[in-house]
Amino acid sequence: MLIVVHIKEFWDQLSPDTQQWLVDNPGTMIVPRTVTAIINAETGEGDTMDAHGGTVLTDEDRHFIQEQARGRGVAAEGEPKFFDSVGPAD
Image (cartoon, rainbow, N blue to C red; front, side):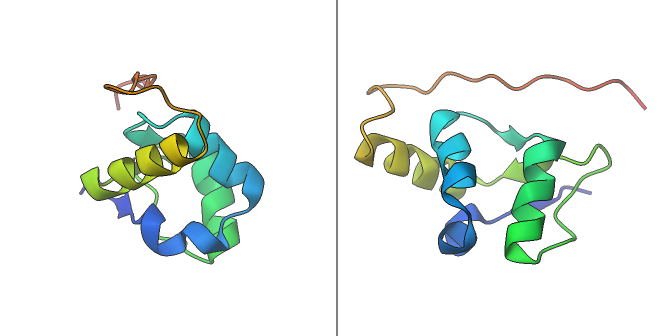
């Protein structure tokens, strides 16, 4: 089952540090479990984790985060860099 979070909907509930992490990593497709736990604590959501504790971002949310990054002058123009890692196989 694919679990997604809609960051755009919760953006104003996120702390400045969490927003900054997302802006600093605008190409991420899967939010790591440590950041997912923080987002869940800040938003009150609890069912957004996959089996590994991470969360998949929607295309819409990745675009939103990239817009936020450009607005803050953080992201360079063009395609974002991807830093996702693969977890161990079940």
